[in-house]
Image (cartoon, rainbow over all chains, first blue to last red):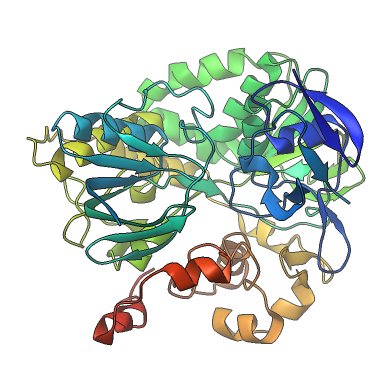
Length: 78
Length: 403
């Protein structure tokens, strides 16, 4: 298991979990806000739809579905 | 600039099969994929063909431009040169809009399976699977094996259209029955589709309201042909045209797997093997493929019924990147006009999700493909060398006849 931070809360996730899987497991429904402010979550989970963009370790617009969790990773999702 | 004899785009079954075949030649091979691990979507995280040790594998690599010669512009590696290209870019899911389809919790059928394979525990989660095609059953069975509670499967195609598929291809029946056996006790409705979704409740066309944690829906698979189109490969009814050696209309460019026709794993492995051998000058075992007829009949059995194009309400978002609703897009005459007036298709997915929606709902012909294939930071574009002179014109010519 790995320990990551989702909006400053500690979440334990299996090693080899993607950030998208970890966020859904942590109960994060909205990964981002759309241009009109609606919550959005992953749609395709394969790097095409870009709906799962989150901020990872301060880097915005990272694709949660194509990023593996790393120990201590900090994720911000509104 | 790093140079290779062969570059393979996509490390799914077709790409890995091509890499294995190409590696046998002793030539230098590079394999690129935008995912963090090899395997593609079917083998996600559990590839059944290993990347050969002599093949250079670049994971988490996004190709955003391809030029004749060939030059592959990608992040984060810059420009890579290769004499031959094998496109094994796979497929994505077709999504059709209905009220509520943008809410979190509504996602692709293949998407939920991919997430489950990527560390999302689904034990005890209630899942409604909806849409069309054999993928629905495969996904439901796989999720159920992981402990999910499948609360129903809604297949839009009527049983009367699915039955002829098995009459014409009886060899596929045992596979289908085995899949159904893994779903004993699960309701499988045919001729039924989702009409709206709100806060975890899905209204189906048969009047039922189903509560679930996830609505996993996919209306079929779409080939990823952007790379082939950018190179000017001839298209045939939406798919990349290839000869019996997987060679496209562009010299030195080969294509394997779903982009040449949605046919699944076996077809992808065979085509990858042929492409890998052909691109490295090895003898190619040409087998008269029987997959063509099945690919056609499969598409007919799960053809989308017109009612599914009428589900969106005026406020239903069609372009999720730019939040463009149905009411803004419907009055437009064609795709280019709609893009300029509404910004649909201009966001980060570059029309990969709403382009097919425009094609299905309004009959709009998609634009030609232009670089960059994916959104990239300006500094990455600036690093790519731009060849001077008429070569730049290739982006504006020769693409209009595609699709």
